[in-house]
Length: 485
Image 1: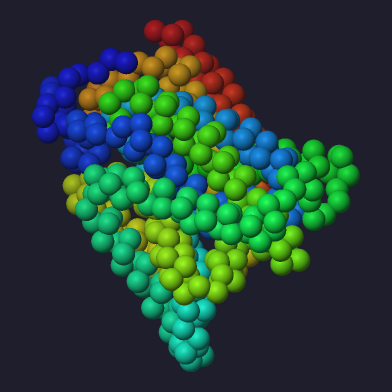
Image 2 (image 1 turned 120 degrees about the vertical axis):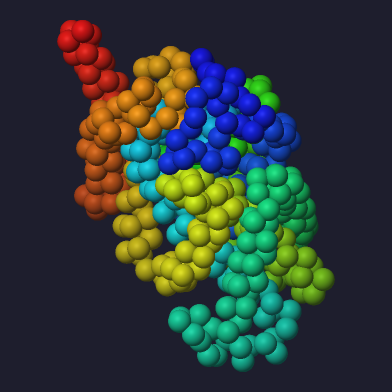
């Protein structure tokens, strides 16, 4: 990579950055404190949550054995590990966040499109994740003190009084951390990720003891044909890739803070194929144990915890699940829109202001109503999510195959034609020409019922088709430019 040295403030050492493209939060990182454990803890924060537990447990309920779930998710997380390393290398070498990295392929102003897509998805899921955690906390609170049940009998805007209290409490706790910047986020996720392990291991020991320490890893609650088992296995791999495609796209937001690439790779290794599959296996073991002990597969850990008739345990569990959700929300659904919104108007919107705009927006969209609407979750968020694969494919091909890793970081903050990332009025028509048809293809595969068998692979298909089309169009454009010269 070729880049001009940076001054102490993070501004380019030569030339003057355009205020429409630069502020201190978007500038190349100069304070790189994230070590191997920080990145490892980041993945613990992102993986250790109710959604991932339910996803792994759901695969078991669908008919895969614990061993099959483990191998499917291990394969998926290995692929995610390599994808994260690809994007992580870009962030670590350039020191800039996702929306600035997107300027290389989409143009200095065209990068606002991928930034906005990622931001909208994150804002909606930020609200939904907070709501889901508040539901779990509400259930546990009622188990601890049934006298609070009258607070659930009257509602406002679709949520009862106790639900509002739990939701606002979690929302405020997250906002308190978010306003303190990336260093505060690093310190928080360093301990919130491991916290859920303590509760999960205790839950596993409890359920194993209740099941007389004889939980089967090969049995399952539903009999499937061999062909159906293969379909479910590969489908699980595709779905986990789609799930982590969001963070894979903007992982440079975190890797930019690492001192070297070895740190990023090692943190990803321990956090993804090792920790993530271990958590998934533990989730399935607990679910299999619940089937043996209670006669039904309980896929919600909060519901399972509520069956432990011990008030101190319930209180600790409620707090831990709240912390776990805060961790995944901050990592996956806050950092990205904070940078993405700052990229739209750097002169007025900082990382902190962008984050608070995201948090307020996540509250205003009434996430409990969104979550209760299959149309919103499946078609709106699912459709936007399908766009992430093509964005990833274009950005990776641009950096590794078109530019061969050669980037002038200073020019990413220059708006005029003197910047190689200006293209046509700040927009790269080649990137948009590759993105629009492949994003439409991915969305159709993900959403149209006729393509349901291929839906789990929409991320693969979107990424691959966009990468190939962008490579072909870029080489064609370069050939025309050379002939014209």
